Length: 234
Image 1 (tube, rainbow, N blue to C red):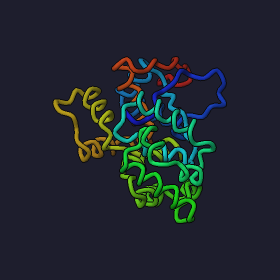
Image 2: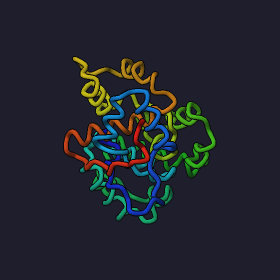
Image 3: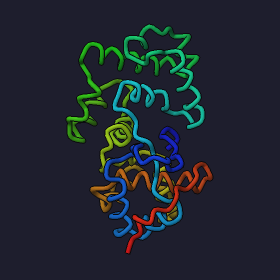
């Protein structure tokens, strides 16, 4: 979860969209299914992870975030946006190595990011087209790009496309959150976490957001969202 967006305070306007689609319905369903999710909702509120645009910029952001702490990634992303205006594939390719390294890109990440930009300009890859694909096809299209593994593709589907049943089982924060929530003696690995989450279909994205909320609040890195009476579980 180090690389995912931190939940924010509930906005004054309900116009802002949060990830994933069906968040409230999924939270109700999970709370009825598993009392532990009900306790997360009662204690920490509904997660407020902002939706990201389904765009080149979001995919680029995911590359930059890899292996970085949340705070450092935010600072570097702001720096990149100041130096790359507008943030388009063509403009990005005009930036030299020194500029990109000053924005936090390693040489390896520079290669990944330029490859992404070229793939879009050469029409070999289209972020907009992903919205028309099913989950598995969209994941496959993203992971064909250099630098995008399963975790990166899953984060894009969950936060940019809003898909409700994505489960980033390799995410360390999710593994720790499940260990704490379920009082497991050891942190579950990727395979074990996938097995645990089978019971949470078709709302695994919502389960992930609830668990990230639990993880961040437990570490005092996020403020609980206001309680929503509409989500009270009978």
